[in-house]
Structures are given as structure tokens and as C-alpha cells.
Image 1 (cartoon, helix red, strand yellow):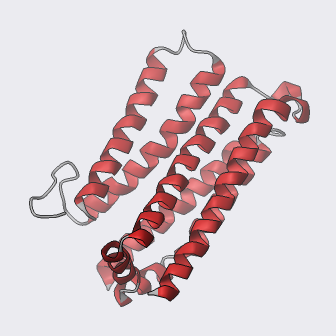
Image 2: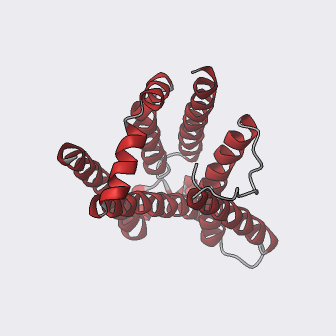
Length: 71
Length: 149
């Protein structure tokens, strides 16, 4: 997996987690629709991140470490 | 390479059809969703969930379309993509792990889950969970076979 893609997947995962946690924090202030929307988006993004983490565990690589020299 | 370009064009058309279908479904949700639904089982949160799922899928499809278009314009990128896809080992792994069929069926199941949300909430969540399970299985099989070969 190249460096660009790894960064992109990590950003995806971070956005998913952030959306889920923020929507849970502000559950009372959000409408039902907004709450569901945040959950829907975060489910997909977190899923992408989880597949990447699985790949990293299997290949014994640090998911947050971007190697030098790999484009 | 011209042959491969044609394959990429086909893929772009295929993905565009999915995007158009998703956008149409989205428009349908906003304008007619409540009329179709059994009102008691139709919650705002489910509509939001469907919209979020659709939006993120549209983003992923558009990202893939842009990737293919950029590769078609740049010869080095096109060669890289071609070499990557035509690697025998990768081809074997893809074939063994279900390949495009599993991916395609998962996308179809997700769409089915979104549509069925208008009629029954449980069915909708079950179908979506089923699609995610399939995708997980595909990823696990890929990992397994990449270690085996």
C-alpha cells in the first residue's frame, strides 16, 4: 500500500471516529436526522479504517508509521 | 494499453451509473420518502442513516472515478495501474477471495438495505450488516491468501 493511500485511509478513519464521537457528545442538541446522518457516514469511514488496521496487523506493520522512501 | 483504457472507461461508466442511481435515490428520499413508507416504522434517524450511508458511498465512488480518469490521462500512472492489476499473484488472490463478484453483491445489498428502510427498519439494518459482513469476509480472505501465496 503506498504512502498516499495510507494517509488517506487514516484520515478517513479519523474523520469517522471524530464524527461518531462528536455526534454522541451532542446527541441532545442534534436532530434525529442529523444524528442518523453522522452515524451513517462514520460507519462507512470507520469500516474502511478497520480493514486497513486488519491489513497492518496481518503484515506486522505499524498503521500510523509511514515508512521513508515509500511513495 | 488501448485495450486497458477501454476497460477503465467501462469501469468509469459502471461507477457513474451507481453514482447517478445513488443521487436519484437521495432525491427520492427527500421528496417522496415519507409517502412510500409505513409511517409508524419510519423514523427520522433511519432516514439520516440512509442519507449518510449514501453520501459516503457517493464520495468513495467519485474518488475511484477520479483515480481512473487521472490514470487515463497520465501514461506512467496508467502503466503502474496496469502492472498492479495484471500481476499474476494479485490476480490469483483476487480470484480466490471472491473478487469483484463479492464486492458487487455487497454494493447491491447495501442499496437494497437502503431501499428496504422505507418499509421495515429491521430488514434494512440486517441487509446493511450482511453487506458489511461480506466485505469483511472478502478482506479476511484476501489477507489469508496473500499470506498463503
